[in-house]
Image 1 (tube, rainbow, N blue to C red):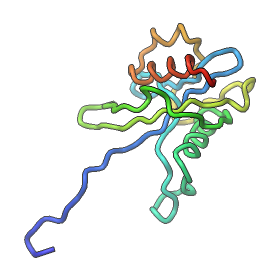
Image 2 (image 1 turned 135 degrees about the horizontal axis):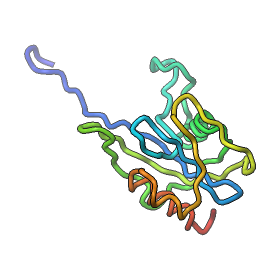
Image 3 (image 1 turned 180 degrees about the vertical axis):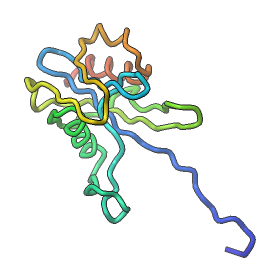
Length: 153
């Protein structure tokens, strides 16, 4: 690069993998965050120590989601399919956009009560008809509906 030209710096989008997990009583796991919204469990992929991360690197988005659901809610899940309408852009605060990628989850511990982590204010289990009245981004509501209606669930 010649002197005086600015170095190219690409714009980066944070990506968050989210999961819809439903227990044996047909209730979806949701977490209440610091913005006073309900959200699905999940988060970013860990890049590992080589990338200056503190946790081991996630080998796939599904593995990241399985780890995040265990950390945030105490449930063991198997990441399932990407959900129709579950990939969308969210702007939680002005000028801060996040690409949300949502999977259906098979709950491997269907009768275990969820456990609240330090990352959220509250944890809840909601029946499908209760979701519409919650303060939550519409993208999450669409994803929840898609998993409830998924033929392979």
